[in-house]
Length: 273
Image (cartoon, rainbow, N blue to C red):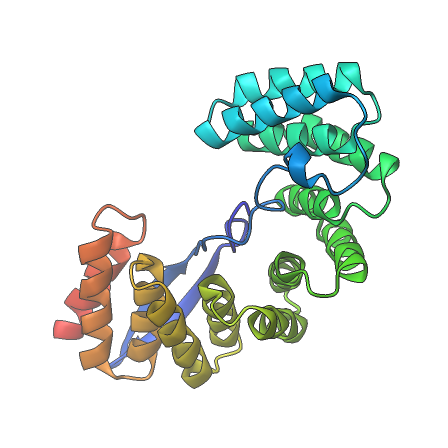
């Protein structure tokens, strides 16, 4: 997850006027599939009272570097905060986020483990660790961590969303739909949850519900190109070639160099025949 279905490659068979077209189903989705979202600043420290003001200062400077995208300096400052206060769970969590963004999953998971050891109720750290388990295809452990985060915070939208992704990757589509639906109940403006639920309905061949969810996702985020592609593919599967063509052309307008762009062009060519 890094993004939804990055680790899945499936093929949807779309019947178009007697032609069998294979559409690569490798989708991505936007936030909230990130590990907890953003680093924790000392002003809102969730895990402890920090008595070392110098450690706080390094933490806050690390957050500023993280936000700017300077991950190396962020890590340096989080590390200094840890040196000054070895029990500073937020510093471990933030450094884990930075390592994750750099692609160093092993160091990231070590820091999440440390944050959890210092504070067993650190829901964000469970999310971060769960996402790494998902990236490593250890979906059972990922689900355990997302479930723990939900137990700690039953209104944690990101936890439901990411657990839904993990269930979908395992092929447990009904549980995935339940989690995406819960995420939507808690956050009705969550375009990614509508998109991902639509993808899951498509996997169950429930194209009407898939189209409904894609449409809602587009209303909430009209520039999310991939949703147009998959809604177009769903329309094509229903032989609604007019709406399919409109969506595929819109997809190409928004993302002409997307990895799925050639699939969209091929689908349009076949629909013209």
